[in-house]
Image (cartoon, rainbow, N blue to C red; front, side, top):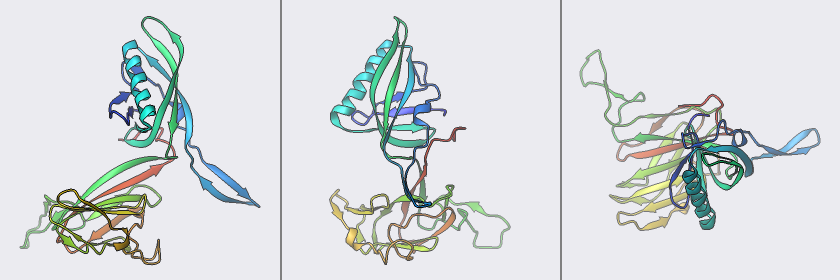
Length: 275
């Protein structure tokens, strides 16, 4: 699995689960792919990925570190703030629910940790910066004259790539000033009929179909009703349309810039690990 971390929800402390003080081995208990389903007559009526629990064998070579971890996970549970498991860059919300000791010596503690995985899948966020005048689709700009070379753009990109085989959720942060920002990615137009002020930004998140306008002084407004929705997914102008697999060109009028975060999903962290 490579690097495995639990980032606490209440304190934001990180617990390294593959370091010299705490070692969780291959952590097989949280690597399995769990899908539930409902069968019909010679068919599957539905699939779902519910929250689940798994156990992981952990060895502590420092008893003080074990005590610290117990306090940290107690704080998460008391605050009811889930932490985040991170495995090779893939993330999922969850809790370390308890530490169940197996063997204790003056030098070492071996135990089982019960882990609660809340999201049903693992997500890897990938951030793209798309700035005004960011060159052509490959991120380069041409000279005004007929030179045989190109030079790299110091701005952003004009294309986004989804490595997954399925479309992915996204979060878009559009920076002001801009009036009625409109962006085309692949075959869909994303448009919100609002004015984003100078120093403010607009957040559109397809994971919960939300749209939030944040002003220069931090004031917040729900602008869901201002986003164009057409007739729903697949209509060509749905504000929360997932980004399709492959490389898609992005186009807009170049008067503003935006950040695009893609959330690629997988049912279990890659067994061979990923950078």
